[in-house]
Length: 359
Ligand code: NAD
Ligand code: IPM
Ligand code: MN
Image (cartoon, rainbow, N blue to C red; front, side, top):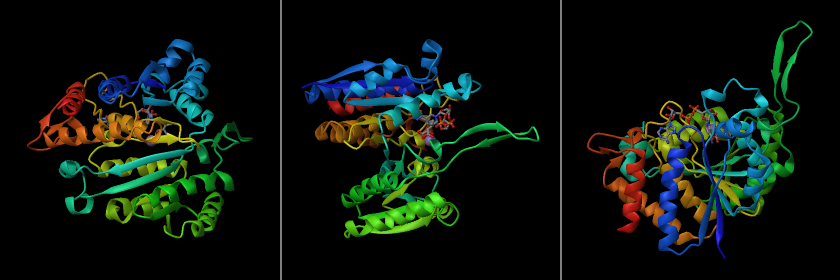
């Protein structure tokens, strides 16, 4: 039976990079007879412009009906001053929460060809392969009460609530332990249990789960130290599991270890493995429309989609191998260009991946 993919290109560089991922998906669809069909809809600023909301009910319903979703990125200065209820980012948060995509997998893997593109020394990063498991539908991003209120003295106060229930912690913890089982069998749970009650409970629940996974070694680390350790000695980590906000921050830091945030794909999964796939970066308004964005994070997100939601492993392997070949050829978008490599545009990079698939 055919599989339905929903494309949500979004804003800024989103449409540019999703177009390249679509080229690549079209090729593997043919080569491997995958039976994929594609639909496209609006999310983010482009949806605000057309419908007045960042995610229309119809688009959300399409997302629900799809077998998987591939997203570019949302947001940009054009919409930054809007009422906070209809900011582009709200569309992204709504789709994550409505579809219960609580498990966000962000693999930071350094391609050996990109050792020179990393801002860290080769010996610190070469061979790097870590997986950040970020809780995506809870924590301070969604906690109530939240808002901006006026105090008695007339000044305003912004407030958010950081909370996690045991069941929310347990399910993301299980994801991390299960992922570690297929890797190097180490989970580092990152929290701020020296200060925040919500993360004291987080640590307790992780400890409670650990005996069920005796083959996996669990350790704990405070988030400030984790940020430092990620740039000091990143290879000490295998799987990092953490809450929504810490995971957001640490995954951008981890991205840079791999040469560029333009290299980092992600999967956001529900309890059945259905999911949405997107690069970890944003809409990059500073380079949008110039044809210079790196499409590889999105292309690699498409590979993750084939692997995790559609069980099309051969096609996923082929895309990842094609990306490796293109890097071997020395082709680089501006964000990863180094001496001796050849600078290419967004579209040239997509075309090169297509050519590598066809060769
Ligand atoms: P950003 O990730 O968009 O950009 C940060 C820096 O990285 C910029 O200099 C940008 O040019 C560069 N960059 C990002 N992706 C790149 C790529 N593929 N190739 C080359 N360079 C790339 O983060 P920001 O500037 O903080 O945010 C811009 C907008 O994107 C904001 O509106 C933000 O809310 C939104 N955002 C959306 C998502 C998402 O949709 N998942 C994620 C992060 C940020
Ligand atoms: C990400 C982004 C989003 C997040 C924003 C745009 C809502 O930074 O996907 O990493 O904070 O989750
Ligand atoms: Mn982010």
